[in-house]
Length: 120
View 1 (cartoon, rainbow, N blue to C red):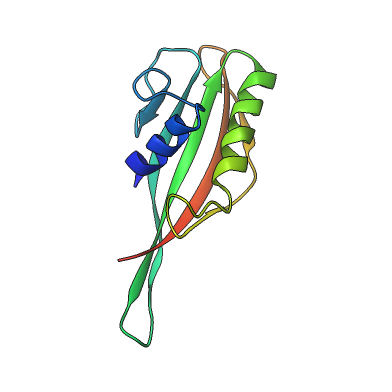
View 2 (cartoon, helix red, strand yellow):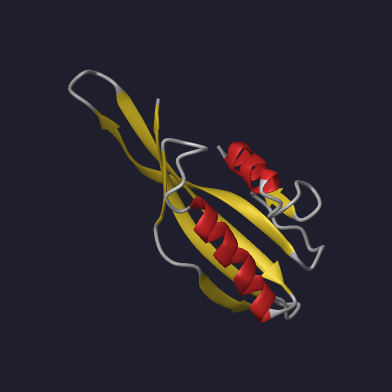
């Protein structure tokens, strides 16, 4: 799931894998980066026709040295992913992007959580 989202972000020149885009662990450098975290999800759905769907969730965290630029980065990811049906049948933001303040190295952090609905 994260790999598909990462590939889509890379294809839109929003981030570059292993340069400023990472999965499940944010490295201490570079200062400016984005990390995608798998965060569990909601109960899977089961339809009367025996098809089922799962509803995994993920978090996007952006870090940077400028509050304005870091906020702009997460906003661009939010605008691209929310309502997107190109990657999965449905991606929805669970909340708007929010500031987490500064990390121990005085870098800004912003996050946003999303859910996906896809067939099993």
